[in-house]
Amino acid sequence: MNGVMAIATPPAEAQRDRSAAVARALSDPKRLCVLENLADGGERSVGDLSRNVGCQVPNMSQHLAVLRSAGIVASRRQGSTVLYRIADPSVLELVGALQRVAR
Amino acid sequence: MNGVMAIATPPAEAQRDRSAAVARALSDPKRLCVLENLADGGERSVGDLSRNVGCQVPNMSQHLAVLRSAGIVASRRQGSTVLYRIADPSVLELVGALQRVAR
DNA sequence: CGATGACTTGCGCATTTGCGCAACTACCGA
DNA sequence: TCGGTAGTTGCGCAAATGCGCAAGTCATCG
Image (tube, rainbow over all chains, first blue to last red; front, top):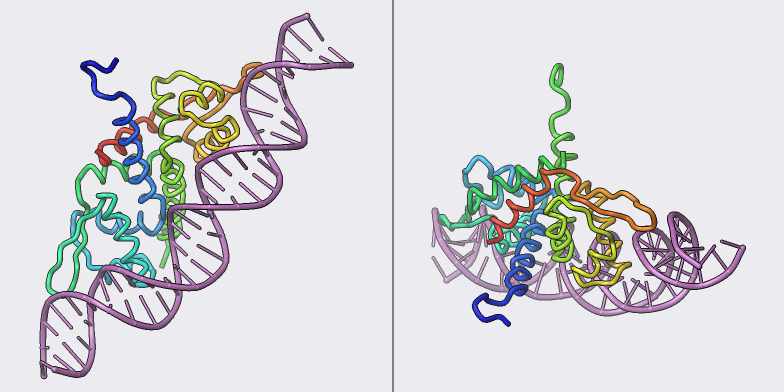
């Protein structure tokens, strides 16, 4: 078997693992709050987000690391501050779909 | 303040909590596999899902309980077997959006 | 160079989560 | 009524997670 078609389950399984990782990154209210803050397409510093969400800066940094390693947000450094943004428009659709199901 | 408009943050926060709960329910590869199995709109028994996903029946039952308490799937009993289905079409959109971001 | 501000990282801890296994309940068929 | 099949629930355990706090890195300014 497996002459033309590549392996059948492994890709689907890897895809599921990635999807699960993304979902896990969205599974925290504070991280969702971060995404709402970034939903306007703008950039925010760690300190700003920390203030808006209401948690300590180190904690926010960890949350942002989770979101970033899931490919949900991206960051760039400007001087001494680091600015975070939504990585891709598809993320906004995902958050919207999430809110519709959770409604 | 707060004359006409109801409280501002509490609803948003409750909504976030529900969204986070839904995302957490989706944050496991096996549960995503369940949803893929149900994506055709059909119904499946616990035993079938357990076999397709590759885990023990009690474990599958727990996973289904998680999905159900998040409002992602619904169940009905037919004789001695219990059939699970996707609770709402919006769930399919959510899973699709998740896969697009995770791609 | 210090010194200060902006983030990140490491660590210990309490909570949660997925799993396997055993026990229990619910529904048939004989 | 008595098995037997189908699901659910309870329990203990290992692993992951969020948090607070301390310490480290990186860039700016005097």
